[in-house]
Length: 299
Image 1 (cartoon, rainbow, N blue to C red):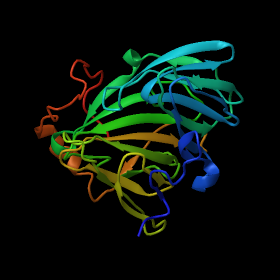
Image 2 (image 1 turned 180 degrees about the vertical axis):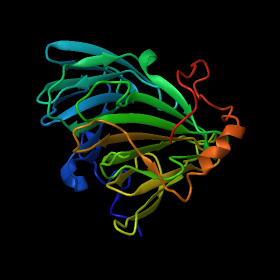
Image 3 (image 1 turned 135 degrees about the vertical axis):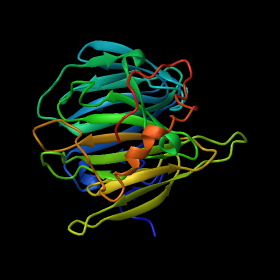
Image 4 (image 1 turned 135 degrees about the horizontal axis):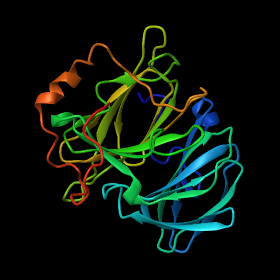
């Protein structure tokens, strides 16, 4: 039986959006995500309202106009072709996304207290990190993390996990504000690469709680699926052998500090120590001409 925190592809669609997650629909207060689909020559006129937005091409290119400025997003063919450039739109803004050739675009959002200016970041400036080792190797695109990009509360990144590997592992949480942890609501949006014969790929994702705050999610995920993490440990995200997994993480919390501070599930944190004797999966980075900008580390 599917969890209330699992949103299968199409279940939240509201044209021209394939995915619509708002704080109201999620039952929380901060994080949001829409994925916008545009046919060739189409455009969408949008309002950011209370949210700040990062416009990230999932496939295709676009032009984003806001505050009298226009930026061209070169985008990419698929989410498995390396990081994309992106645009940032501040709260209380009118903006337009237009695409000459058509495409799909993630609108990562979070409630914002301060209005920051419209900005553009090229793909070449997105930090690429190889995290973990062995069959826990994954590739992280830190385009909108707290230490790489200025925003009011929004934190966003992409993770690519080669087929057969585990990521978001060991399970970790960030659901309370303490010395070592930040309270952040998190959205996982998934895409799975097809097999060489065009077969549809899949993976699995887990969320589990503590005795004080129980939650239990274990779902098969496919392209376009979403899993919400209101609290609790989350991970692993498991890519089925033969099928690379992509997920977009969108996070925000009500705390004054914009930070991604996590604690591991103490039962499994020892796994990190095994990575020192293993090599990073040689399939990474999946974009072979791109050199990672940071060493392996982290969750």
